[in-house]
Length: 282
Image (cartoon, rainbow, N blue to C red):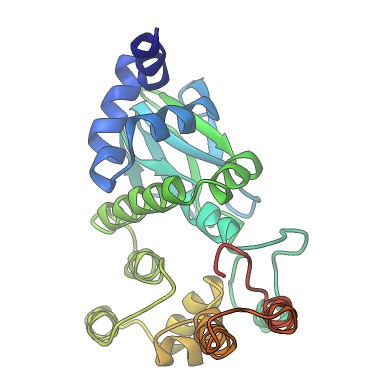
């Protein structure tokens, strides 16, 4: 009975097994984690040309194409294809994963850029039209952002491996026929995924900018769209990481005696609240 239960917990239909082996397994996701992840999804058969993301529209779903393909259109011009075993809507989802609220996804700094006439979308808003292939359509698994984030917040290893799968997919898409700026945005997105950027990574990005004539103004707009400041990029990590280092020092100081007093607990709690550190970070 135990063996049968274990098998039922890891059983995958053939199309899901192929997705697991080709996309998720190599990032360290276990069969059990994958099966639970897929139970949160809905399988959809998309007719040719059916929308998956709309330019200027808020994205609420993450897609994984199981068969078929998707067309990517920007300003009325087809700029690429998304193939089988690739994601749609991953950039807005990554941003959503790291935000506590999506009530107003356009910070004041971005509103100022819009007012000045710069084209700048919210990270939750798609900047391209994506639809199932006009010739073949697509079959895709889709997750609601809310439901998926809620699950991943309580399953950190599944979250880590899913984000690794998304990062690998973003890297593949760099080779697609997108404009240099779109390719740069994708490279930066993958580079900043873990909240850090090394000196070598910054040098590679600088080389790409020089080669493709991407200005520092464009670079800063890309950073802003990913909720990074210019100062954080130059420093190599986001403010949250600096707060985490300071919290670690405070924690070490409170534990010098070998025990944590009630006053020490309260001091740590107040610090976490003031800088927005959750208990998982603690």
